Image (spheres, rainbow, N blue to C red):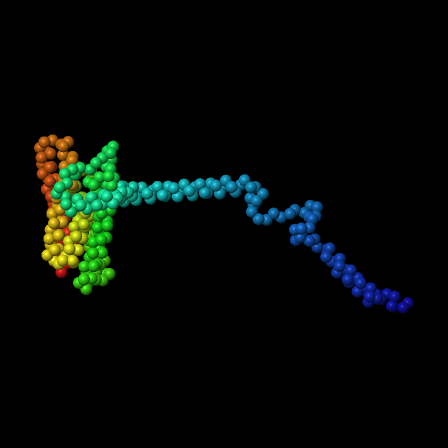
Length: 298
């Protein structure tokens, strides 16, 4: 027989190869197509958030976390406000800055001319002192604060007239005045403790009374810069006498207010100590006024 019968024709082999290639795609199941229908028995693999099929599962957890975080923030704020108010009574500071223009004018006049003023008692409303803008006798922190700042500016001007101005020297002047003020208040608190004086004076009250002397210091330095050293001494002497009278008449009522409830002998002895303490505090004001200003006027 002819051997060509058993040989496969090249065209037939080519068609068989192409058919095998076309059918080869059916040998493996296509599982990657998301848009094609799934075959029976084929399980679709779930991806993404496990709680996506359960909408109510993630909301309570997030709400609980938010509520817990809010509670921690509230507790932290309350703790910070409590500790801050212990050292710096922010709520009370609003009272000492409740002033207006009329009060400032009257208070400045009282600090410079205290001799004609008669009623020195602080007014109260339901056991609470009225705001400074309603009572010129009430202590405030506005005038001491502005007086301290103005004193530093005037000191810088005075140093400039002497060709000694420098930012470092002005900083030393400001820090020195502030340190002396703090030391004065601490010394008064220690004296009140040693004398065992029961008074309603607070640390802020003492800071206010100690800061009133900057008004006289500013007047003295400006007078010296404008009219010379004799004018400085005259104006400073007047302001020293005024602040001495102001301090005695103001603190005398504060320090002697608790003596009426004590016995006669105890009241007499403690009144004497309190009067000495009042005079010492008042006498210290002119000393500080001169000490902090004499080098500014030449």
